[in-house]
Image (cartoon, rainbow, N blue to C red; front, side, top):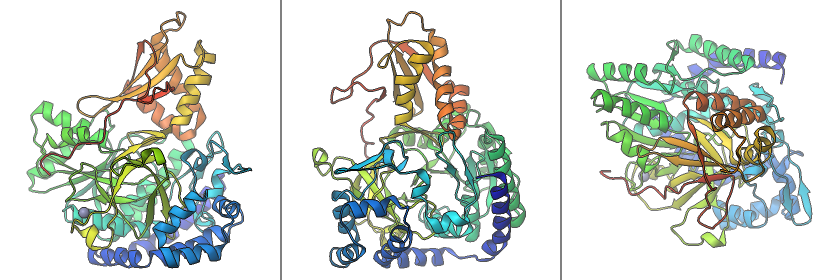
Length: 530
Ligand SMILES: [Zn+2]
């Protein structure tokens, strides 16, 4: 999408902003919106299926439904007789589901004798994409979409309001510590709709591409002027001291601030506080975008702060929020007004306590991507025990815990697809610096504090390869694949996140040696003291 379209999109956004910010709602109203949405979820699903799938000739799901011989009347009958979740499981078994790599268009979808080559834009909701302007072409044709549609923002407000209320933060000063991309505007504008304007916003990193940076600045400046928000300040994830100072000042004034950021950033801040002898009592971290593992939670909570999880991704914004009454570190309730979540059928993981690949179906009206049994690259254990918390009372009884990424690597709020990482390690690096496929393996581990540490294991027989140059070469090649990878690659490089070690590649539990190896952290143990 060109500058002209971006420009007209900005004008539309500016026009709609004023109306958006006038339409305020209180927390009780937000809770009612969620409860109503849960009660109507089957109808919401059918409406969305009709509008965004059956009425959209380029919808991948329409083609998968046809390949499965599934007419719209069949789906409707199934939903009426079996309910939504059972219908989705039936559809998934009939091949109406997309894997993470199919969703990201890194792999064609093969169903029986048919092969489908989907394009990223095929997954867009035609109604929403017509209004969306934030689309910057990736170098491989995979656009980075940032939802900034005002209707979408209004739909997010109840999710934020109930999350903050359930976790005791609805009257707290709200801070953001995030990258500077335009999508953050959706977060703070949604919170402003129920009266929680951010007190401070610390930007960890600006966008790298000049047009993205300019665009983000325009979106934030328009939002700031329309809503009277304070100016953003800089605080990189590698130096948390400005955020720490601000939080301590607020606590000294008798306030109980909450901060939305990435778990690894919060863990760094907590470690800094510990080194300085500062206690973070009264501070709550609202943590999304990466799994909140038991180790990360322990590091954060050792500082005196609280850590609460929210779950979602760029394709699936706001899937769920922390259950205060669950035994697991990262247990979140799925917002059933907005999503249905079922497990992909995997006979080898049939035990009830094993984690399963999640298939998400989005029921919200104004989300940019249509998800129908879509794997967003995560696995989790799915449970449904009653707990009596606010989410439970609103009808959101499905809970997920031990959430982990299976097909993606997410650090500090940005994601690499594992398939791309493997492509660079197996095909690109050997061509660029020597060796063959299998000579390089990226190993993901966590240190004691839950902070990320990555090692590229290099075959000891590669005598001509200079170890010191391997991480930079790896990151430079990744950054060439996707525009938004540049941002993450530079963060990794600056923080020196990758070490190099000589040795044999590591094998997985099943004995496979893959280019990307995740050392098993195991499911997070029951969180102590909660
Ligand atoms: Zn609960």
